[in-house]
Image 1 (cartoon, rainbow, N blue to C red):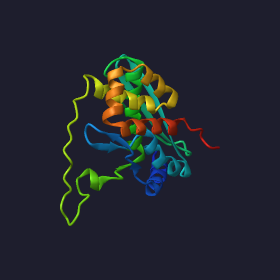
Image 2: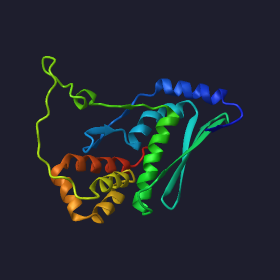
Image 3: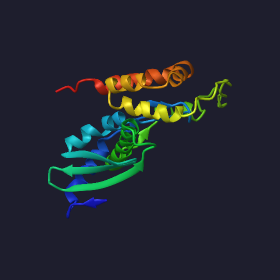
Length: 209
């Protein structure tokens, strides 16, 4: 990480902002790992207000060289002081969709790190099997589900990345997807598909003045 010559004011402001931040709600599901994660919108929801209130702003600048994707994150303060860092990852291919998914992934984790936001699981008890009766762990009901088509997991990741860009981008990605991928998602985990569409709709909502 690089910083301005002095960071006393930005550090003080960030400490105040972090004291006002809540956790980022894990409202996006990963059915394959039976877990939830906080998407980019949830992280911003957790930190945008406190950062702005304390004179702080975050600017993220993505770049790509083939499959090598980098996101540069700059935390600035009204005093002119700043903190800066970059993080990189290799996208699975150099297609716009794969690169866009990698950018969203890096933005989310860099934002969490700079703002100091911790993901907050809204269903932690159930996720760890602690939704219990009389102290006994509730056992999952066995289910038989056909394995996903080859490449499905990567496709679903890309679909979530498209949703991070709004409904129009998601609809195009859906239209361009393989029929067997779409069929598997809608028949085996329809709630996941509904969640992805809901997130895209949320991203596409106009920002209130």
